[in-house]
Length: 493
Ligand code: NAD
Image (cartoon, rainbow, N blue to C red; front, side, top):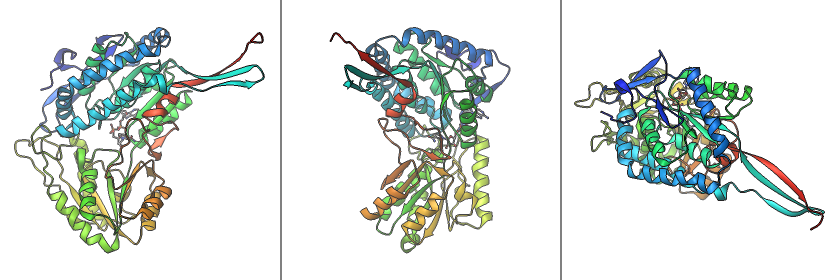
């Protein structure tokens, strides 16, 4: 059972506003469960428009003082937060496994990626600088400066609750803004623990707030006049709605959506290495990753050999409870999502794809209530099939043979999504063609999952991203600040 000091009565998740833990007034709530054991973990009340309004007003009041503090002072709580995250990483990982269902190693990896963003944001004093030009005109010097804007809100999905909030929060506050997080209602406990650490880190009250809830809470945030900008990460249909509504309300907005990602394997690739990376890309975190590459296009001459290697690799995966040693693939987030994934597998069968490995019979001793699906491998998956086009978000691979790398790129670029793709090859020429031609935001060569480090932006094109400035790195500085120009003349000089 997850034990947190900040939970309210009956293990109720609470909001964090103005430095206090607050139970939102609400009739709507969700029960969160451990997706591997079915155990009830707590209640998640949905914050009302009034709860959101309190958080926004508190954040805006805090902004008045915070934005004027020296930048060196603004990054001190981030150094403290980094230490606290390191000290508590094992506890955070354990909560994450229980609330989400992934494995302990995956949870640690996710948190490490989150910490990386805190580290990068500690460099804001250098990153936030802009240029100055002496003698830009007769007797005139000109400088460009960056200024924080006010309160920003971030809305996050269920699949990386320990990392995705940290793609945004550290940059928002280090640049001098106030910040509100609305995490996924499906697994809010690791975020609650994160905010216990934020409470200890020494941010002034009101600079960072946590508001739990669902759709209405999100709408209250994107409609609120007191919010300057919205960051959203989630599925494409919701990303589009949030992008359009927030933009219509005059806000800055960046909205990351869903995906359908491709791996291309050429005949010059190291096939065993490529098969191992392919299965781990598609099946890690039970396939619940926006960067999972699950459509696999293989040059005809090596298709059969590669498909066999993929099946062997898929067979070697152990499905189980994320806290148990030896588990490679944990549980899916909910029973509802498990049904969705199983329905996609059924669709693949009905569409005529060849079942090379069926993961539907995955059962784990002692965890009858768990939402488990094992790695499932389809062959002969043509471009027109639903399982080739739609995001499944489960451990399901769709393999097909292609004539050439050019044919694979053409097929990949026809997708409505553009989040990630990887090429496995021994040919520099193929790699260069792929890099130039792919209409994709995160491109890997001999890399299974092309997840950018925190000092680079997180890519995403087409229906995988709405906006222009992305999460992480330098883009975050631009998103969270506006530029002003100073033009100075001192005739006596
Ligand atoms: P989701 O879209 O269901 O929910 C995301 C957030 O939106 C949650 O906080 C939820 O409360 C809120 N929400 C849900 N319905 C809403 C509505 N109608 N109006 C306003 N807000 C609403 O996504 P999810 O199932 O939590 O996460 C999985 C999805 O996120 C996948 O599609 C995955 O690809 C995507 N994702 C994308 C990235 C990326 O970087 N592109 C990263 C992680 C996840």
